[in-house]
Length: 172
Image (cartoon, rainbow, N blue to C red):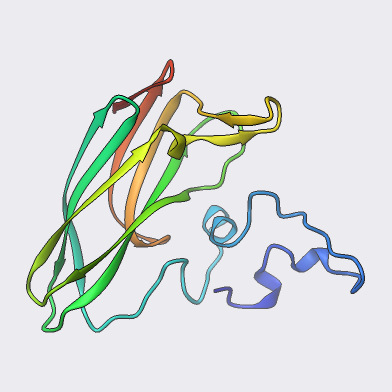
């Protein structure tokens, strides 16, 4: 949630009430605020809870064109609660403009007080793709990517780097 109307990506585009301009490109919502590090009232995915969650024990494996993530979410509070683990993909470099990170998956779990739950998430190769206007199709570039796991777009708790080389996915 933006701090002010002036900090929204479309603010400068509204000079005529009868004309709508969509000039943000890929920088819509959290992608804009996170890419340009603009302060917000509440980051994308932020939730309120009486429970206090910790993320730990990330294990990642590659099986063909898929990346499997396994991690634990622990509840350190005296009440049970629900947590939504959000998985973002962040390209580290490249020749095509992409946002800082993009939400690719999420998993909602209930964790009892003073317990933990195992979370499994599988990302296929398409999680690393973008729409290419040059080829008019989805494309996956070779390079290094960081897969980030967090409670919101700005509260990243765990991460792992992967590489794509000649179209093959591998842990970095």
